[in-house]
Length: 340
Image (cartoon, rainbow, N blue to C red; front, side, top):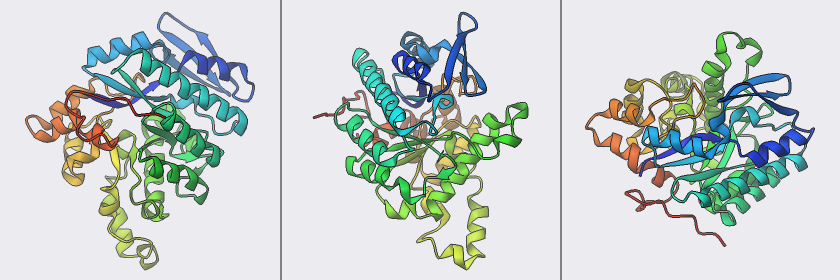
């Protein structure tokens, strides 16, 4: 079974809720047979109808050779500035809808629970509900919450819940630093999101998150941004900065090797290098669909990167199951989570 762990979806019930609630300042306007203009605050985003339509999602998956997609909320609709009550209500609707979609299409969809991170205690409770009651696979959180990176102590309840539940968290960039300077030429989406992921990865390393939660499983979108490329430069800073070195119990490589990364990087040589650096079990298939900037042929991309190397087959058929704690289910089945 080939599993795409990075694919976005917007349930209709969720969008209707945030469209009605003034706390979110969202509206949409159809602009063509396949496109919708979504206004979030003062910003406009063109989104294709596949984001909102399970049938289109399935046709896309069939064309790509993807058996199952683990869905998460599309980035433009992540709003950590909304009041906590409204944010929790929206998250519950989104997560309920994901579970319903999964049940309507067995073996084709699963979900990352969206969490209202502006209130970490409520986010932790929603993660517990989404996993224990709905059977979702883990939680989806952004690389920063209102400019605060994930090493901030306030987010401890969410990480503690993930560890207790033994589920991974998918870390996707949103609200990137420096967006006021990257608006031209689409540089916010091309580079700004990746830089924000990079900053957060190093915050989690040097801020102690990975040491505080040694069994925590985190998956970083877009192949971890630029964190792997900067590993040697970051290690050089550690080697020449005793104060910084005191914050670590190992090398930068040691910490980077504890994270998971999706395959959305567009350079097959880079993906092969990342597998050599990290070990192929740290890489999981992702497409970032149905965004136009997503990988147009995620399965073929992995096969081109690895050829006959077994690492490619591991990425396509086994690593997602390992990341989700489902070792032994990787070959042909994806059993539903046990709820109770």
